[in-house]
Image 1 (cartoon, helix red, strand yellow):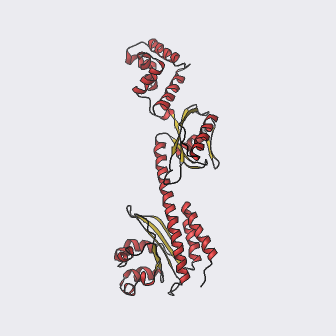
Image 2 (spheres, rainbow, N blue to C red):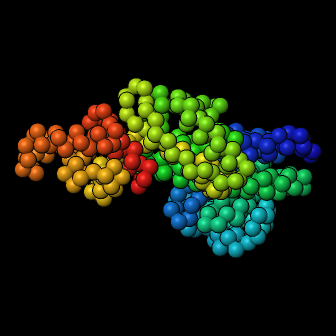
Image 3 (cartoon, rainbow, N blue to C red):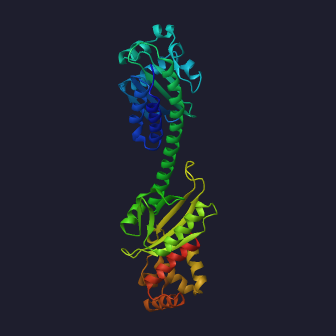
Length: 371
């Protein structure tokens, strides 16, 4: 029996495509199974700490075989300690997988394998830390495996192990990014992760919402802001990331044209990326009106910058906290006209034409100076 080496090589390349796109695992293993001239394939990788299947694929095999084995027969399998203590990364077959004595005595063989017509089977541990990972194949009949089939399986095993490692690394990176994205979205912050060549690999729900407000546009070409200053800052940050010269501290506040809300933008390098994915640039987009109001220490620093009097500082703190002037006047036991005078003086010192402009200035000050 001669295997088609070109077909086998093409099937192996499919394993690496599956590492990046999990939906491709089944078709990739179907191609591998056919290239090996095998009947079926059984592949899984379990997280031992969480006792769950992260990855489970069968090819021309009833999925109930795996469920029955894990739920019922694994505890009865007398081979289990021997196989787990056996060689790692080696294809087991024949007596290495089932001795004649084990075949005759084990209910696993008679009640689990034979009913599913799994006669001549192979299996191998993929040796992933903290995981039980297994790859096995079966033949159409009880004829033994040919040497070239076993050699090819050993080759496939090494590539499957590497593809699985890539798959798990990328899955961890995505989980970390999703967690980060959910956390920041809950705070009203959009996050976009960009590679050094400008490719977007992640954007959370708040970033998608900001795109709907036309703050920026995300596409296969990358990220483009409506604000030209932000685009220049982004280009500098990506250039610094690409040449590993350190991303300059980039913080710019821009206004959306649709809601008139201020959006704070920060560019932050992520050295080494997430899960070893390479250095990334995190773009944080922060709608300032959605953040918590300034506290007393922030108002005090703002007042010191513009040399506000204590009365002017208090009125700025009040309107920043959402109070109106009449409420502030009652709490301070001053007239509404006096409260208006304090606010007018504060606006003049901060060169603001309106109360709205003053609030925006406070937002920007807190974003740049303290948060």
